[in-house]
Image (cartoon, rainbow, N blue to C red; front, top):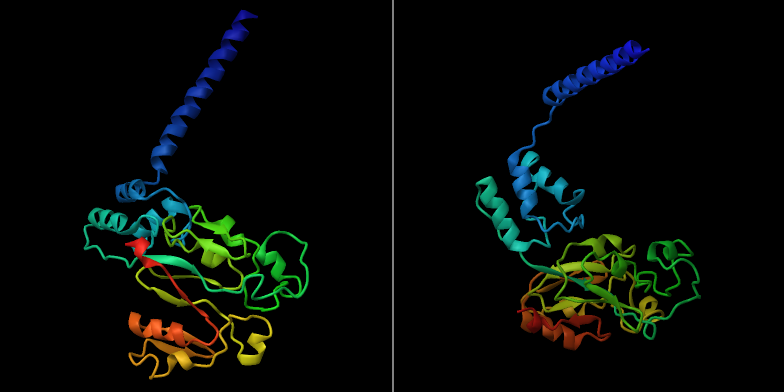
Length: 272
């Protein structure tokens, strides 16, 4: 009986040793070597894993930079400091990235742009959009359910009492998560140095806009006229004016002349 037990133990031990040697050989034979540059770049990234770069987390981005030549300026939270570190690791010249900030391209709060029905569903803008196109009378306006606020990985947004999201610029990293989250395309990234932007994305004109929002752009094109913005800072794209140059003097004139007060003036002093 003792001989049987001993033989069994020896047999199991031998099998264990055999499997161990086999696994050790396999681990070396089939090991995937990791480029040390990937690990070094990963260590320099902020570790936010926000996905703003378009890749699955910081590890995915680090690998893409080294293996696929992905743009080394895509890490918004890391900013110029991380760009420089990645450039040093890759042995290339760094390219400074223009700092940006998220803005809310809608001024139609509850008072200025009323709802057409009461929505009692899930507190999610994409879900609300599925119910008759959303409760907002303006089919382009903010639905006010705060999906962008909840999606922000840096707590750089909050909901205002008027039902519109507010960007906390001192915390914003311009990762773009709020932009991709909004089902109505209201969130956008603009240069930090840009003081004026249009607070409307409506493609309608005049009467159609006025019937649903008192501050919506009516597409009058006054702001784009040479007598208002002689530098050509504003050009019309469809029914909406687009800022193509940041001539502050001209843009402030456009703000003053706008009949519906559709432009927003940022306080950029606090960003300097």
